[in-house]
Image 1 (spheres, rainbow, N blue to C red):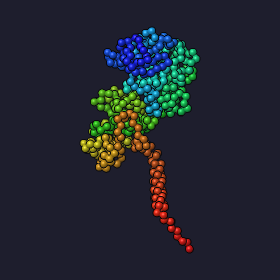
Image 2: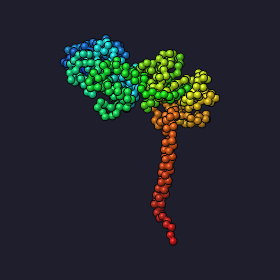
Image 3: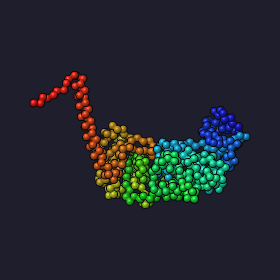
Image 4: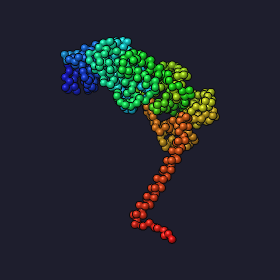
Length: 502
């Protein structure tokens, strides 16, 4: 294999790989995007200069990675070398670096941070168990967020446990401090980096920033232990850290005695009830509310969770899925592990989809009326869908169930007509949202509509603010009218009249 790197636009490696572009360059080599000439498949080729000190280590680690098969690791297809370079041909991973993923969102929620961290822990445990390998360069740029989950890339700094590194190649701020003081490679090194990574995900800021971490006291304790200066004070390996994160993720310390339960039902089939339930859960999650989404059973569903829109990350711990940070418990064909009442009380809001109105039994409505829960009746905009809505509304009225109407697939003008014609008292229009797991509505409309405690707390202040705004608008209107009159008089040359005072 012989390459001239001055012009790579049409260079062919080893008679197999056509170089398409340069993906990046590090301290010890370059990475190129290539296409296999025969198969047509994309490959990433790393070229490491053999004159560097890292060459021998890179060769051993590449051989170790060839034997690893994990969904969160790139596949190593081949290794080769010539007189100048050592080559690693591996899977090309399409996705978004975690650094960009967090930057686009500002910061991640606590649930999504835990979910991503647990996925990284799982692959670190596998690497350690199979080959005794540590990554040693865990940072946002080396975590790829893909549609299939989290992928850990760039093993140029990795090393074997209990070995002294030939040189420090980690990233300042993320690398464990002992690596800069001739310490040996240990699993605690990756634990430290992962702790710093969690801080980055929660704040969106690079290491060393003064921004406070917005998370629960328990997760802050986990991060502080990960980033302890002394290795013996940290979690001894990724498996211990995974246990702590899993315990925090599934059994939150803050227990809610009476979670707010919001039921979502469709007036008929295919009106978007599932889609809207996901939107509700995503919104509350993005606002920092501990929210659980429970989806209705449906035999036609093949996937354990509906993946509407572009989903970047999905994982499952103890039967609770995390889809882009949204906690989901599906009930499709018995795939999900049932969650008990204690687990439910760890969430302050539960969004529960109950399917179509025509699939619900009368006992369901009796329990809704007795427990005083909020029910959202989702309908479409067509004649047949609105006819189903009228029947469903009558059925709820007979059962004494209070509900909120939600109109789907309608624009603003159409929604106004539908609401008036069908006498919808409490209603709103579902906005268009192709990616429900990333939905967020500003202005607190959803909180005021569905969370009674929030409504009671803010209702009086909102009325006072409304009156103040009306008074301010009235004064502004009067001032504008007086200003116009003065300008007219000034333009006509008229002098103001004065009354004589006797």
